[in-house]
Length: 210
Ligand SMILES: C[S@@+](CC[C@H](N)C(=O)[O-])C[C@H]1O[C@@H](n2cnc3c(N)ncnc32)[C@H](O)[C@@H]1O
Image (cartoon, rainbow, N blue to C red; front, side, top):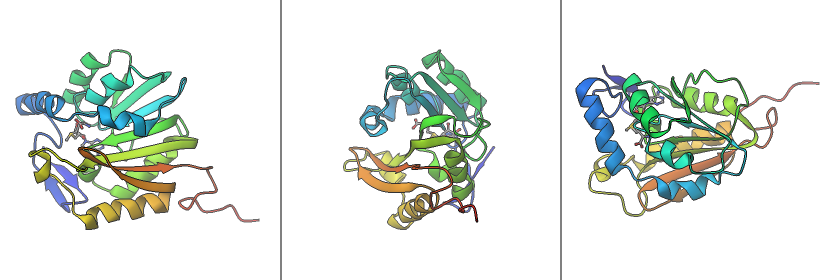
C-alpha cells in the first residue's frame, strides 16, 4: 500500500514509507541497522519525570534509547502494525499505538517532548501533522522534527535529502504553529526544534477576543 506524501504531492510506493509484509519486515531491520539516532538525544534534553511521544517510530531504534533516559513515560504512534510489532520487542515498557502524526489519538497537552525522525516528508499533510503535534504538547514543551541530512549524511541518506525549499517549507510551517523555532545540523540529521511557550498565546492559535 502506498503512502501519500506532501513532498511528492502523491503516493510513495516504498516499504520504508509504510512497512507491510515481508518487505516491510526487512525494511524495518535495515532501518534499525542504518538509522543511528543517538546523536539526537542531546537535542531532546529529556528531564526526569517527563512524558515523551515518538511519532513514526519505525522499528524502534530511538525508542530503545528513550527507554534509557529519565523519562517517566515513553509513548509512540506509527501507522504500520508491522513496525509496532518490531518496536514492541525493543521497547517493552513503551506505550506503542497504531496512529499517525495527523491523528495520534492522545489527549491534548499530554507530552513534554514530541519527536519525529525520518518521517515528516512522508506525512500526507504537513500542516495538519504539526497542528496535531502542537495539540498534544504541553505548555513549556518542545517538538523535534528530524530528517536525513546533517553535516555528513551516509551514502544511502544522500538519496533521501530534502531540498532547501522543502526544508524552508517545514521551518515556515513550524513557525506558524510553534514558538522559538531553530534549525541544527547534526552529523547525519537535519533537526528543527520548536517550543510551545503557552497555549492560547502562540502564533498558531488565535487569541481569545475580549
Ligand atoms: C523511513 S521510516 C523511519 C522510521 C524511524 N523513525 C527511523 O528513523 O528509523 C518511516 C516511518 O514513518 C511511518 N509513517 C508513515 N506515514 C506516517 C504518518 N503520516 N505519521 C507518522 N508516521 C508515519 C512509517 O510507518 C515508518 O515506520
